[in-house]
Structures are given as structure tokens and as C-alpha cells.
Image (cartoon, rainbow, N blue to C red):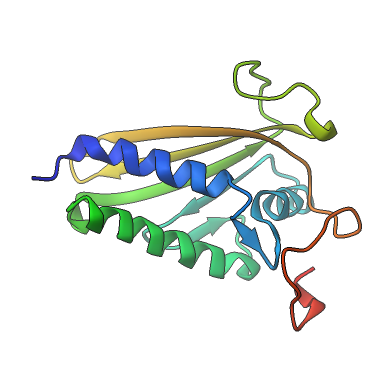
Length: 157
């Protein structure tokens, strides 16, 4: 029998997967690409809601990544036998240049800045199930990074 308290485990899995180097956009680390978007939009965070696939600030370049994480969300719910209608919202918020926390961030790691990923799942009772992941990141720069795989088009760089 599924229990809503298991949603915190789903939030944890999503946050840590989103933070991983396997989260790529166009062959580059997704967090770095999101950081570059934040810099261009003059904001310090990017928010993605997985149920409705909304993103703030919005950018169509990230639609495949959002679809991938929505699919992962529904797969995780299915494996835990959690009905999809128990989940009303799933927000992933990536905060760049966040407060340094020695227990989570590496001091001057690759000269990047602290980044905090928060995944918040709101269930049908309005309860919040929250998990965090931490890293150090910098805005994407194709001149300094290696691409995971070659694209047919260079338009995503």
C-alpha cells in the first residue's frame, strides 16, 4: 500500500538526478546551461514545474529535459504504486550563487559558485515533501567544456 510520506523519497531522487552530470541539454551539463539562461535573464534561480511542464524563465531549449524529468517522475510514482492524482505540483528550483554551506558545497570547487537544487512535491492534501541537492556550478561556456556527444546541429550551443 502506497503512502504519501514516500513522496519525499521521490523528491530526493529527482533532486539528485537533476543535479547529476547525466542531466544534459544538447550534450552539456544541464545545470550549467540553466545557469547561463539565468545570467542572460538577470535572475538567480530557475524554476521548473514537472506536472504542467512550466518553466520560469521559459526557454524552449529545455523542453526535452523537462519531458525527461516528467517521465522519470511518473515512472518513480508507478514503481512505488503512488497514484499520479496524489501529486498536484512538483517544483524543481535551481538557485545559483546560493549561500555557501561547508557541509554541502566544496570550497572554490573548480572556481565555481555554490548551487542549491530544491525539489518540492505538493500532494493532494497540500502537504509539502522537500529534498535538496547541492553542487558548485558556473554558467555554460562551450569553449571551456567538452560535449557529451556530437549533435547534428550546432544551434543548441
